[in-house]
Length: 81
Image (cartoon, rainbow, N blue to C red; front, side, top):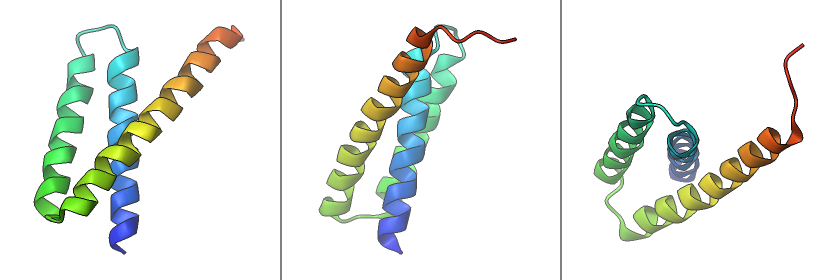
């Protein structure tokens, strides 16, 4: 069950960081604060060093995946009907 929480926290944190890096408005800082808050909650909940390291590693990997997906989506040139 702890691995599921690790996966979910990392996934949500990566989505928040991807939104932060791709939005060019003042509201982007809300996503940054959300990721910071989520990281603090994870670090309070799981005190083991191994889980903390895996949280950061998995969140960074997911962040790169979501950023790549967003970049590919924007370069496809799909417009709304």
